[in-house]
Image 1 (cartoon, rainbow, N blue to C red):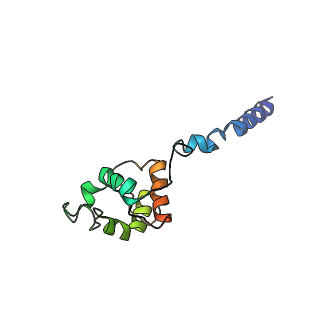
Image 2: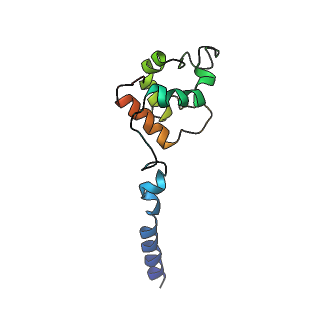
Image 3: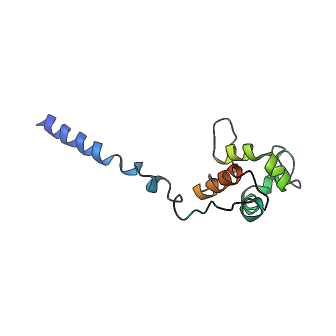
Amino acid sequence: MKFLFFLLFASLAAFTSCYYDSEEYLYPGIGNNCDTTGISYNSHISALLSTYCLSCHAASAAPSSGGNIVLDSYASTSAQADIIQGTINHSAGFSPMPKGGAKLGSCKLLQVDAWINAGKPEN
């Protein structure tokens, strides 16, 4: 009887444990709600940086607070795009950003990726 109960419990656990393997549950921001077309520095990236990065990574911020990475212009942001991509995605070998904050939402991450993949357009 104990074996039968164990077998029933194990099979129930096996069939219900994959509930959260669905992409819709893991990444609710991904889908039709995230527009990654026409992403440019001026249309999306500048605002994102202003909201999440420039308190530490502007030229006016103390150099030590931003690790000497300045992101307050197109030229400086474009030059640091690979570092930005690694840090905001919390990739191995990069310091996760924003420091002390939650990881950016999946749509914002996809938009940064789309900007970089499109050749980092300014306008």
